[in-house]
Image 1 (cartoon, rainbow, N blue to C red):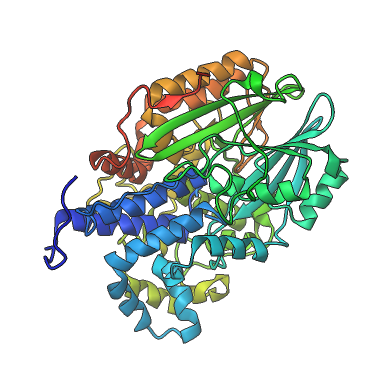
Image 2: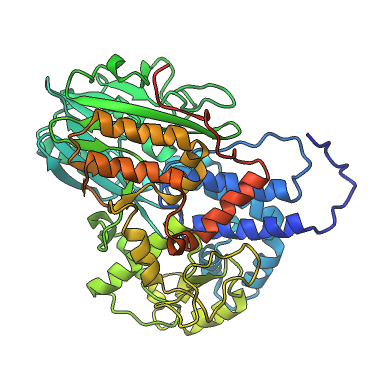
Length: 561
């Protein structure tokens, strides 16, 4: 460890510092303009902000770096995205606060609009840096009436869809999040990744014939906070239900287990850890099976997920292991307040005029925002946060915007390329250097969407990009073994229910195996790899600076010890 530099020694500008500023911009864009597609991405945003600091002024400090491990999706809400926002906020305070604040605050926007403009620009510091736990509680209270879309996915199998985003962003990218409820063979139900128990959600349970005494198990399938945050509330509502958590939950720097203050379970609550050996789980002989993988992908930072199989319906149930993307938005995103976010992203630039009542407008907004959540700084997008566009120019466009009612007083710091430019080189991966994204020679976002939505290996789905590139890929051998075990153990898979975006997905044991094991093969065809330039550059940067581990067998485990 390098010794800390004396406080009196000024640090001259360096290449690392410049890269740190650029990285902070990418983090701001990814998690403020549009939080990640899954909060797997959210967890890594915290790592990204930490990287920016360590690459710059904090390079020589001996302070430990804390990684917040999130779940998908890619892409934002009451939990992981707030952690991200707070972390990125601290980074941006040191990396660019004065300059950006001066530019924005000298504008002619009315006082009430200045905060909105700064937020839209991707300046996380405008949100301030409120205590994360306080913000979580505030988000929960504010969303008490948030909509829930409930559907049956088969006999004794139910999905409850909600959505989340960063509090304070009236419009922006929102991520669908899902709770799955499975009937047990002996009666009663298992709740996987409990969502917010709003009055509407609880009534929907009743409408499906599920009473309070029917909830037997509450399973938190991952350590990502947005999938476990409401666990304590469900235990309070259903006190007779057993709670089963991911074994590495809140395990560093102090192993709080499930009892982390404020967001954890009250001390004294009986909580069980989901075992790697599924035969030790009480649901094993009751119509539900599971497998679990753990990957230590960065110092003191872990990915862990329990996937389940509902035998009666042949359903593979997971958190962030897979996502599938339909061309049409999930129903939950077409409900207010999430519809407003799709309308905000429905334009190529601030001066576009769109028909807010047209299905095609809503579809375009959904596809653009999902591209931003999954690809992070897509090649088709120029933005203020990434340094492609200037604040003064975009403020001028905001002033002239014809549809200011779409949000932020017309501020829309984006310029999307609609179709492929004649001079574009689709297979060329962008470099991290400034100006590598040419205004005139960009792929169209519609082509980027098609390459993303088709999935991998002909399956129609994929492992989310952040989970694949930054987490599971740290141990390709364990990931491949896990995929093979899923196919061998559950040959009767007929459909898959991930916890984000489209579900249920048509699936087979072989297609699930192919999609997960594809992580060990790289990003795929050249054009698809080029589309993921920002994430791959971010991954390489983290590897070079030892902030995530390089791929190596032994970092992951899925077999019972």
